[in-house]
Image (cartoon, rainbow, N blue to C red):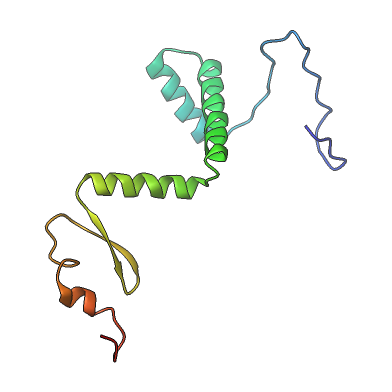
Length: 123
């Protein structure tokens, strides 16, 4: 990690080459701790094990998103679009952007709907 002259706190200890695990002191909000504790209780693991698993999952997600050259928002949007299509919804380009029409909706299939978006004087 790049050393920054303006970094606060004490200097970090180096991690030895043979160490498989390293100690990390972490301060989180009370709400985050309650959520982690609830999840740990459900899984029957320690707070430490659950926190480590959550950090590993977050790091993996960062790698996946970087590999997709995508942002979180784009990833979520693509997931929505795939789910909507699977349920039979279809996209329709409207006056204010893309609208998702439910299955059986007559809009989008009639020429009247498509012509309403055209500017006056166009055919």
